[in-house]
Length: 54
Image (cartoon, rainbow, N blue to C red; front, side, top):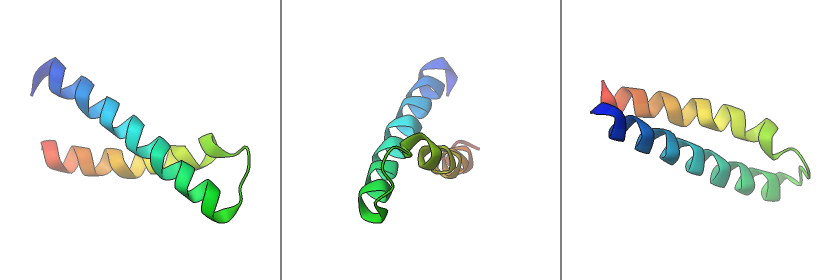
């Protein structure tokens, strides 16, 4: 896919993981721990992006 595809995939993974972490934080009342929740979300979405590309 090239450089444009890689950069767009990274941008989409980042946006999705931050959005999902905000939902988890508001639902579970985990104030101030967004990055702690966003890391596993980014790994999860990154796995699906790799499966889609390859």
